[in-house]
Length: 212
Figure 1 (tube, rainbow, N blue to C red):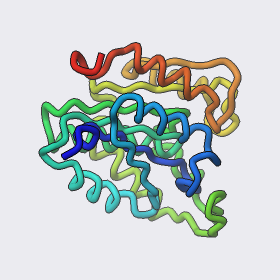
Figure 2: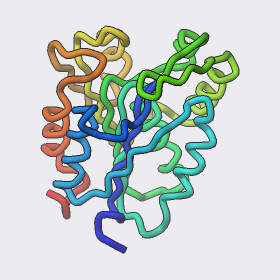
Figure 3: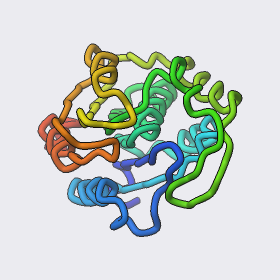
């Protein structure tokens, strides 16, 4: 097995989004892919239909076999929330495996906020319409409540202060007691500080010592 495949980095897009065919359409994904290459990681972007999040989670858990030596889950917005969920689920199945979550402008506390998604939606990458129902919301809440979201696992949260979709001040209050949190001035929900965030993650030297 190639060395990179033992050190995967999974990337998850946000709600009503998708991984574009050409990463150049997403400077954020381009930066994450380039960082993974520099770090010798196998970059694994994944399209997630959040209406089927539990099934996607099970598929991903089954994909991380015994040859994997550590995992980084990364994502933005809803993908950031899903990255944290995947970290916690995998840690429960593979105790002792180093697993980090690195997220940008993440969604959070879906038990309180998931109802705001309900109604007609349009995927802005694929242009496909879909409906988000209370049942879809409840599936996400069930995933969230099945884990200890505030568990002491390596969790880097990066937030743009001028995020126009998710309240950055509320996000800061929610995450500051259990995550490695950094808030950047300016920016937007798209998240415009990916390079700086990944440099900060590099400086944390995770996992030690082989990759530092």
